[in-house]
Amino acid sequence: MMEKSYLDKRQEDICYNLDVINEKIAEAAIKSGRAPENVRLMAVTKTVDPMFINMALGHGVTLIGENRVQELLRKKDELHLDGVEKHLIGHLQTNKAGQIVGVADMIQSVDSVKIAKEIAKQSIKRGVSTDVLLEINIGGEESKTGFDKSEFLESVYQISEIEGINVKGIMSVPPICENNTILCKFFENIYNIYVDIKGKKIDNINMQILSMGMSGDYEQAILCGSTLVRIGSAIFGPRIY
Image 1: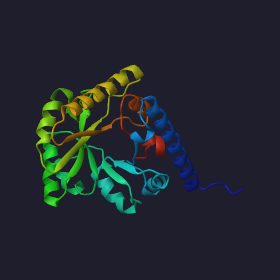
Image 2 (image 1 turned 60 degrees about the horizontal axis):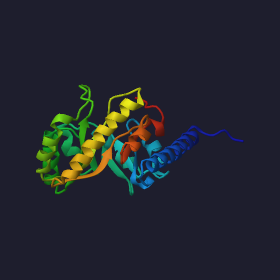
Image 3 (image 1 turned 30 degrees about the vertical axis):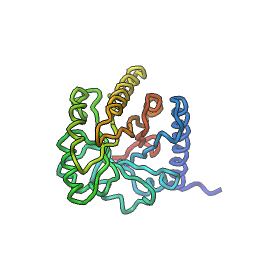
Image 4 (image 1 turned 90 degrees about the vertical axis):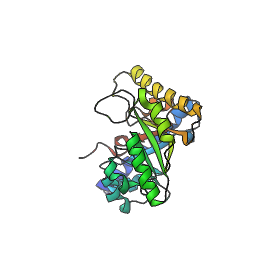
């Protein structure tokens, strides 16, 4: 029997990983009282070669997330993107907003009123309206971007008045926690903020998406209410920088 090529083995691994992850997502969704289709899988493609991204797209992935504007712009023409959404999930500098508006289907990392205004300005200039998520720095970590939870509600009201963007929900990355109980407290805190804002029925603020949970904690995130999990290394293997 011929030995499998490196590419065949990579494809087999990616497809196997996706099958396992989809099964775990479904189980966690059911445990949380929801249907599996109510939790969405994003394949995070930071540093991943387009060839391997296409393997995931060929195995049912319909949503990808990139951390950097330049990386998304460089890869997109090599990807099989029919029926696939592209989200920007990394910090966006104001001087890059004009490059990504109209390219990304959603910007998940709106972390200030200033960047919200710049995305809106670039959207109006291009005759589009951009879907966004508002990022909360739930642990108050200096190393991370995002709204501080104490200022979040006030910022939501300010952003609700900006034309050119549509707020579709919240994104967050909690601190790294060895202890699942502490981790779940962060997830529950994010979920409570999400539900609270949803209940206020603010114009132009539609809390449809709660993006939390990554390769190491997506099952816990789903149990705590996440509707979208961002998974990279668990699909593609360790990142190669």
